[in-house]
Amino acid sequence: MSNAKRYDPEAKQPVLWRGWLLYVLAFPLLPAAASSLHDGEVVEAVARGAGFALAMAAATLIRKGIRLDNEAIRRNLRRRASTVRYRAVGAGLLSVGVMIVAFFGLNSQHGVVASILFGLAVLLGCYLYYDFDGTRKDPDIAAIGITTEELVELLDEAEGRIVAIETASRKIDNVEFRDRLRRIADEARQVLVTIERDPVDARRARKFLKVYLDGARQVTEGYARSHQGLPAAGSEAPALEDNFRRVLGTIETTIAEQQLKLRENNLTELDVQIEVLQMQLEKEGVT
Amino acid sequence: MPKYLQRVIGFVILLATVGQVSCQALVQALLGS
Image 1: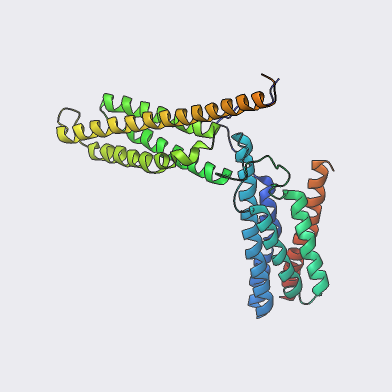
Image 2: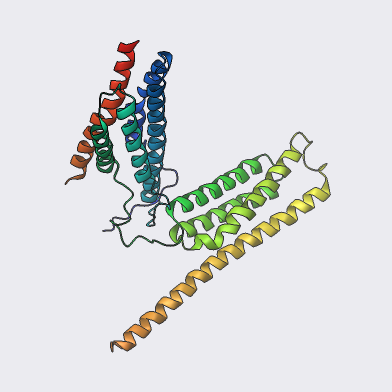
């Protein structure tokens, strides 16, 4: 039986409890910094403040790393998470922050060696608790091409544009336009599904997802806005209506072309795979 | 090492380092003022 999980875009994101730990643990540094500033201890105040800022930055980066991992699991993506190793960078920042606070911010309670040991222990703790972004653990993960971070960003932006088109279309009274916009949204979602299944296509569809879809959103929102507060259909400016009808036609054609292109690309890839297999079989004497 | 054990150890280390340093700073600030 297959272990593959079905991707459910409606599924709620799990709460990142692990990511909150550092915010909580480092929070006392803020009142401590304020208090030492009040007492006129400038070096201590700066050290504690810097430690707090670095810990907050680290917590944010680590949370981002965890979120990307969760997204990749949720969408069944097997790609390199990001070009930036968020969790490793976060752990580094936290380690530096703790070293600074231990050495400068605690009234000379710890020496240089103890502070460095604190820093190293933080790195180890982060590694065990957060698991650095494992590129070496999974050598089969695509190391080239689009990363999970780029892909998720691209798809989320596109989904946002589609939702905006749907929201704007509900404000339009014209039934024909509403139907066509609903179809456009459905077909654009199909393109997103195709890309999610085979992220290699993402680069090819980038212009469509970013430029054309955004243009469609702007036009739809503009049309909906211009018709709000106007009397019902019939008294609408016919020229504007014709223009909108024409632009809807262009959008539909673009989406159809995009889908065709993606399908053709997949077929070409399949063609190449078949040819390679054929050659391999012939060479090795199986056929 | 099992994952949960790794997490527990990591959690304890972070508590003992980040938690300790920041709480020490707070205690010093409270006692100092």
